[in-house]
Length: 287
Image 1 (cartoon, rainbow, N blue to C red):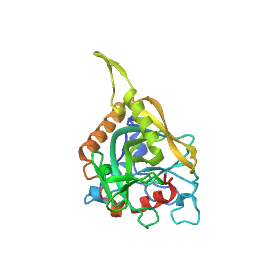
Image 2 (spheres, rainbow, N blue to C red):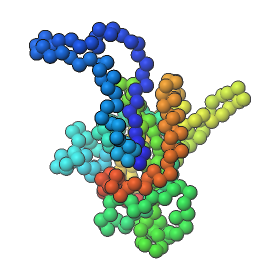
Image 3 (cartoon, rainbow, N blue to C red):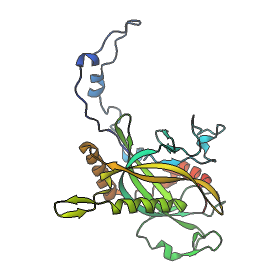
Image 4 (tube, helix red, strand yellow):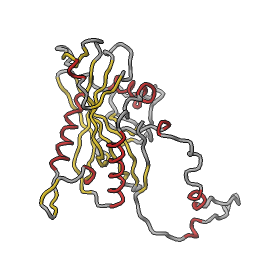
């Protein structure tokens, strides 16, 4: 399973060390905790944590039927409203109009196999790599427009997986995350990829296409509809070049790690992604 890392890429001066030393609380007399102690004990308690124990944060759009916006649901989040963007691990909410700043680091397409809607299965049965020939074993359903497997009756869905760094503009920190676009969201993915491939910079040998993580983008949401209904969708907007060398290095390292180690990345779905799949299958547009 992919893992995510929270990283502080800010560079600050040392400051007054006296401010970090233990001082007596005037009311209780209890000494304050010296931040140097925390730094000395950094990582303690996590020595046996492996990649399998961690979950990759995901960004998802909150819909009208999302349990996070329903006060009667156990997964309700205070202040959550349809149209907001949710970090599924930190539970951070982003206003859909203001959006969230991200850096695209890697793009990995996959195909996922699902049971027909209504059969009760809320997690993908299997996930295939983007170069799979699985679509050659399907037939398009003229009513649902889904690609149905001829032997099992399950359907195949194309997933556009964008591995990103979420940039916290207030705290100057980053977090690794995954944004999966599917169904009607594939047009947003295509637009984003077009923006990335069309970006050009001038070098000593002329024009060149920079790495995807050379620019930041802002993800927002918008209301969309067709003859089958309406829903909230992601939109992507190019922001500005990455100028922080540390931030660029973090994005590059994440990109290399995902592109190198993504084989088998998505097949640990039976338990690790069941809850997310359960919510997504219910609230996303089924067309």
